[in-house]
Length: 297
Image (cartoon, rainbow, N blue to C red; front, side, top):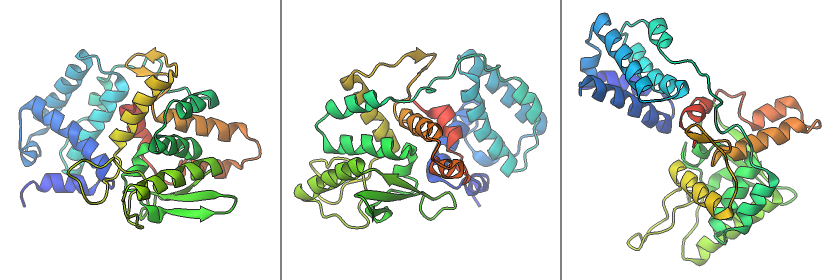
C-alpha cells in the first residue's frame, strides 16, 4: 500500500481540520530533512531520526519560534513516528525546546463595550450575526467546519432563543445556545439570503461565503480562516484597542469571545460549575485547546 505510513497517521486524527494542521507541520519537517516520501521516513534508524529531530528543533528555535509553537509542530511529527513504530528519544527532544518565559497573548476577553463597537461599526447582517453567535456561545471558530455547521443543527427554543448542535456525529458534540438578540440577528441574516435568491434547506450552511459572479448554486460554507479574517477587519474598523504581546495580541480576534464567555460563566454564582464546563466543552474530550495555544491569532 503506497504511503501506508500516512494512512496510519490519518487514522489517529479524528478531525479533518486537525489533520490538515498536523500534516502541515509534518510536511514542514520533511522539507527540512529533504525527504519527500512518508514511508521512507519510517525506515530511518533511531540515531538518524533523532539527529533530524534535534536539528529541526534547534532550527525552529533559531528562527525565534516560541516554545508553544515548537511543541505544537513537534507533536505532529511525534504522532507520525509513534503511529509507525519509529523509535526515538522523546525526553531528549523535549529538553531542547526553549523554556516558556514570556506572557502568552490572547489572555484578555472582549468587553461588552467591544461587542457594542463591533455591532455599530458594520451594516453587514452576516457579520453582526457572527459576532453575536460567538458572543452568545463562546464556541471555537472550528465549529463552522468540523463538520460543516448546517441549518439542521439549529433548533428553536422557548423565549425566542435557539439551540446549536456542534461537532455533530462525534462524541465531542454538545449544545450551545443563542440569546434572543443573537437568534434575531441570525434570522435576519438567513432571511437576507432568501431574498437574494438562495434556496435554504436543512443542508445549507449556517454561515456562508458570499456568492461569486460565476457561482450559481448554493453558497459555500464559511471557513475558520474566513471567520478570523472578517474579525480582523472588524477590529480595525471598530477601533477596538488591542495590545501586542510578542507575536500576538492580548485580545485574540475570535478567541476573545471565548475568553469573555468563560469569564461570565465563572463570575455568575448561579451557574452550576458542571454546566459551565459543558458549555465550554471542557468535559467532552475536545483537543481544540492545543490548536488554540498554537495557532490562534
